[in-house]
Each structure stands twice: as structure tokens, then as C-alpha cells.
Image 1 (cartoon, rainbow, N blue to C red):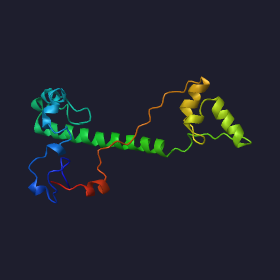
Image 2: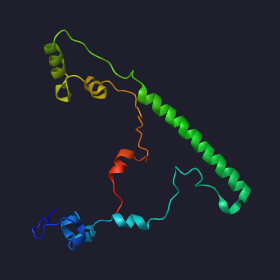
Image 3: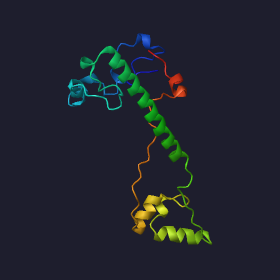
Image 4: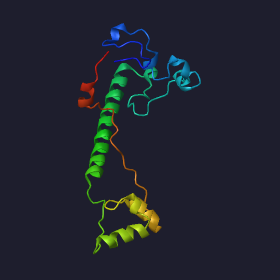
Length: 164
């Protein structure tokens, strides 16, 4: 590893004293962040997490037994709801009946069609159906297609990270 300033050739970070070229902020440290308001979000009041199944329990006005029953019931319901949502997501993700194929007699016919429909620049094999519908003046019903954006960490990527 060598400094971009050409001062020293290093084989270990143990001898590094000037890290300004490594901070990604142009060498002036966190001074570049002064104009950003991003840190003000840390002063915002805490809000209830809508995904927290027990976030709305009234702990001050319930007995310990009532809290235990309500927490257990809320967590169980959250597991049931998540299971149903996962089943629906799985059905949507594995549904293969969402495409259609067009067939022409020649490649020239296919390319002529795509050129006339102003779609050729979007591909010549797989075309976004919503784009084709829009070009044809057809309004499609809305579709809320959820993607699995869980916070589950990929073990292969996690293995590449070394804790410092």
C-alpha cells in the first residue's frame, strides 16, 4: 500500500499516522460534513417502530401477567402475519404465468415491429410488458410486487468482512 502523496511505501497500517487520504472526504476529515444536516436526525424524538409487535403495549397500566399475555399474543400474531406474507410473496415470486411470447415469420419482421413500436432500443428478445402496454395506450392495473429486502445477512458476504 502506498500513500497517494508518494511519501512512504507501507506494508502495514501500524505505521500510518496520516489517514487523511483514506477518509474519502478529500483529505479534510469530517470538516466536509459541516454543510450536511444528516446528523440532526439523531436529535429527533424516538418514534414507535411500526414493525414492532409489542411497541404499543401500555406497560404502565397493565399487570405483569397482563403484559406477558399481551406480549406473547402480539409476538405470535406477528409470526402468523409474517408467515402469511411470506407465503404470498413466494407464490408471486414463483408464478411463471406473467409473460407472453410473440412470434414472427422472420427476424426482419420482428425487428420491423419493434422498430415501429419504438421498442427496439429496449431489447430484441425480452421487452418490458408495461412499456409495450404504455406504447399501445393500454392502462394496466397496478401491481405491488414486493421484493425480499429482509435484513438477513448473506453468510458468504459476512465471511469476507473482518472485524476491526
